[in-house]
Length: 293
Image 1 (tube, rainbow, N blue to C red):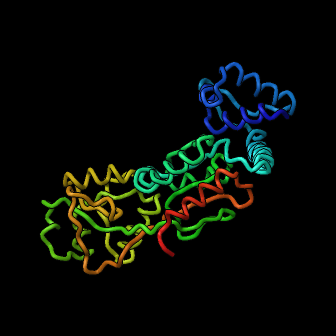
Image 2: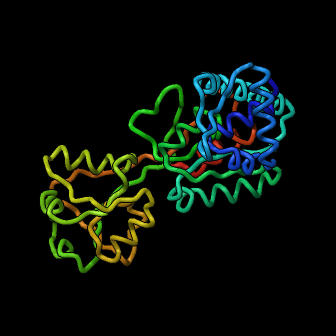
Image 3: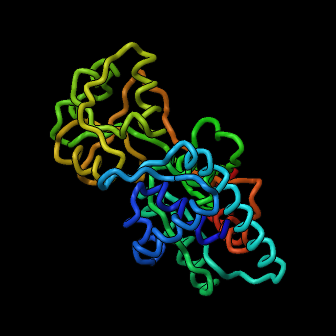
């Protein structure tokens, strides 16, 4: 099995598309097709079923996929190990982060890193924190700076960098704005604009209200906090946001029966994969910008 053929196979499997794989690999679609055909001939099995524009893995393809990822991960790990021996800080650093962290927490770190290490090509992937864990496990990114879950899924390792207090907020003209300290039950009687229930932030809020036996009217949700701020800012509902995001469009409210809420932001990596020199330096710079322990 040739490495380029395996790379093409994983790309087609991930994208369920030969054309998308070709775009990602900067190849023609026919070149990707030839690589898949060569791999299928070498293995003596069909890896994909092609019905019209639909591309799905066969049983053989599904069996090969995790092994192909493991092989490519080992090759990449070996390259990193040998590169580290030279002591150079170069190559590429594949970094996953959320839009919120990328906008509000990382700019100073990214600027300083790029100025000190111009030979490193930063590959930034903006994605949900939950999706970052999957990409780390698949070795598609080397490092993630995201919202940390209560427990980091094995075998990944994580470390806190910032505390991120969360606050309740409404438009200043919202009915809840006139209450000195509304209860959670009062909030439950009004429409909410919240992060999706599949996000770690959304789960913090839903657990709070579920624990109090209060049903939320949260038909409007999105994973993008900037969009939530806009929607709450124009009066579409109350919300919960990082305290750093509450601006003149919003008024903070403090429910009398709600505990202090906060998220934990930090880095996540796969400890069984060799960290590149670029990743090591980036982690050191993150620690320099971290909240006091």
